Image (tube, rainbow, N blue to C red; front, side, top):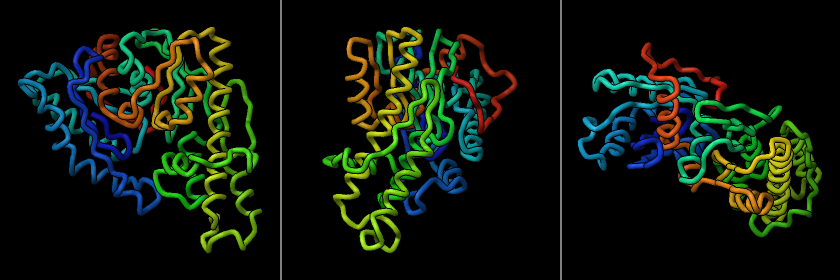
Length: 333
């Protein structure tokens, strides 16, 4: 089960790799009017649908709950109220069904989404984890053994896309909105800074550069809300911003891969759904094994939690004293 932010998800995973079912209830429409996730609303929405989502996930499994051997649930990082809904439901189910339970890092789930989607992928491999809250390069050295090699110093890539979307007057969520606007745009019309740090990422300067570029268009070119009036300008700005984000991600991933002599690369997390990023990674690492999960495994889902939980259960055993929620959990295995 997964309830770390604004998607309520449940899945049945067999032997860590076979996805029997995967159900996701999205809250995008609920939060779109607010321009971002409202934690209290998100937690209430999880509470309303989690039972239905779990039952839908169990429906294709012969025997239903009677065939379940263990429960895995996201325990962090995430919004504390949202995490509590998933963990309390999972723990109640585990006690009622007398099966073991294991708490899983949401970020470990993203790393394992690549393993889940590629039957030939095994550790060690490098994973670029890009989401609304995280931008890291992680090496899964062995199952249950992961190390972070690079990370953002400020905004995550997904957060940067959300802020860019607001500055450009685009919709929520920001990543898909910027990607749509960037199609057909001139990425060279508005030069954006390319921060180049070998072992870190930083998107705050890029965000500031976009704000100043929009300001310098002049009052006549802006709406009353301060966003560009001309759709062509919005498209070009979005294309320029997106290109700068992707180039920085590629630079850090490339330098890390060279330093580690990596032969296997994965790109995971919600931002990995960006088609321009997917194509750029495939070009950059032609000749290496590159795994980018399908879109259904890039965004938050419970199948990846099942895969990560299967390995954690084998490596560390169940959480016999119960699962402890940690909204700032900082682990990848």
